[in-house]
Length: 182
Image 1: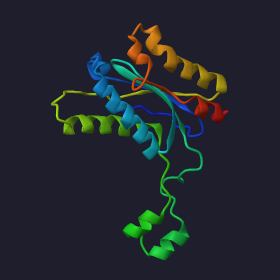
Image 2 (image 1 turned 90 degrees about the vertical axis):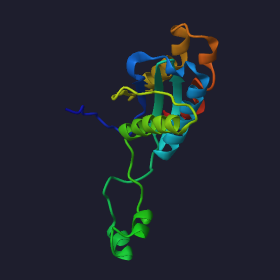
Image 3 (image 1 turned 180 degrees about the vertical axis):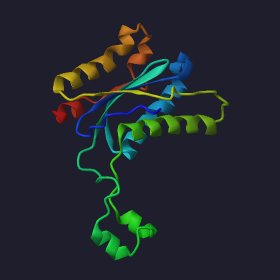
């Protein structure tokens, strides 16, 4: 049975995903750097503004906000676009259509799968697996968003991790973007 997830594309989210088995996989700075790059790229591809992330040894926290005004509803094909091209199956017709909006599930699937793909295509034969599910929290007030950003920012210190976890590639906070949301 699958878990139902409430999707609200008008609010930011706090997303958390764990490494299967609780292995401290991201103690390796190379793995953390690869994950940081994939988080940024996937957020851009899936139309989410990256507000903050914290890569801990065995899990990751990500704060994102859907980009406003990007895409349309799923399966929304305008009559004019369909009429010009003649058929939806025409590749040129599909390219002319607006992109469908992505959900946080799409975003997390992208991050997780791209990271595993990058590991498998790398030079090392590293065994790695994410836990199948992830945790999401809707940040529907300014106070809730700010407390989530603060949580992500100070989580490495609270956990007593070395100083390297408090800077790139392990930690990222975009204060300018956070302030522009509310």
